[in-house]
Image 1 (cartoon, one colour):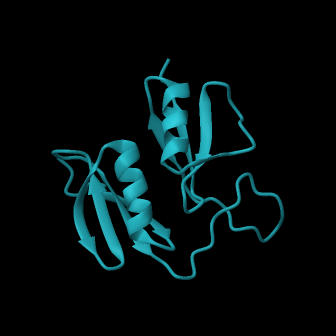
Image 2 (cartoon, helix red, strand yellow):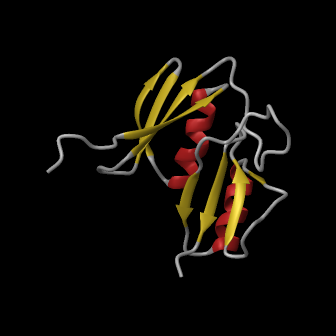
Length: 124
């Protein structure tokens, strides 16, 4: 067994609590830790968490990058779903936005309320 493990992925946002609540609803996660500028959510039981940190100077990434100097996307979340259309509709209802550029038919690229791109996809 490795002495190290990935415990969490941290996303900056103008409001950590608002973004954590979006992903909590989207993924069915529960709150593990909540502080004034920090929230950790994770799957029921155990598993890798998502953490959110309030960053007053947060600038949303631009995807796909359009011009030199744009804030580049540094990572994105891939979320596997059973029904792409149903889960896309649900994500939109929770506050996500559909990206204009959709590079694949079996994947939907969306932006969370803070502007981070994420993908919904169906294993096939």
